[in-house]
Amino acid sequence: MTTNIIVRTATAADIHYAETITTEMAESAKARGTGIAKRSPDYIQQKMEEGKAVIALTPEGTWVGFCYIESWEHEKFVANSGLIVSPAFRKTGVATEIKRKVFELSRKKYPDAKIFGLTTGLAVMKINSDLGYEPVTYNQLTNDDQFWKGCQSCVNYEILMSKNRQNCMCTAMLYDPVEKAKEAEAKKLREATPQNYWGRDLRKDNKVFDRWVRFKQFVLLKGWKKKDENTSNEKRSSILSFLFFW
Image (cartoon, rainbow, N blue to C red; front, side, top):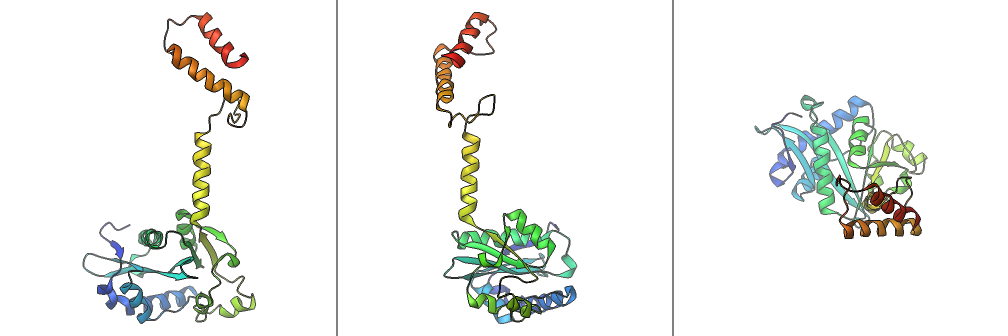
């Protein structure tokens, strides 16, 4: 990414960029030939004033990119929407940085919310995947009618409605903080679970686990160390016998 690009939370001082942002959103969708939920400059300004958007700028104040946050079902779901980068700054890595920043902002403002997105862009899918999103079916997203009304300006809206809002051209991706916490805890437990030489889970095999604990106690109490070159073969044998046959 161009090192001098500033990526930060947007503020009310940035509202003069709103017209440029919405124009580029529409032009980009037209060039790709894909749909996008249309947003007005007033709506973008509102997101900036609420501190629910991320903007990228050059030090000189040239607009580079943008993305904003929406919440649904009493903040149960959060969407990072409207990612757009100025054509002059594409393929610089700035989109990844914007997505990372808006993801962090979403987690800070809505720590318990499921974060989701709908996109037709492969690059966005890759960024989402790196952040921990997973592809899901539409029925795992919000049921809020207001969210789906936002798709009315999309060229694929008829397809969406013909599928009863269960499928469309966009790919749905979801970050579930509850599931991520479970995965992290499971990983922590796996890493903390002692394994013997045969890969057996010693916490599930009480007899072997008991021997393993006693062996540790024996070594600690006797002060035996492998690096002690004076340890006799007889002593080593007695320790191994204690571990496996006692």
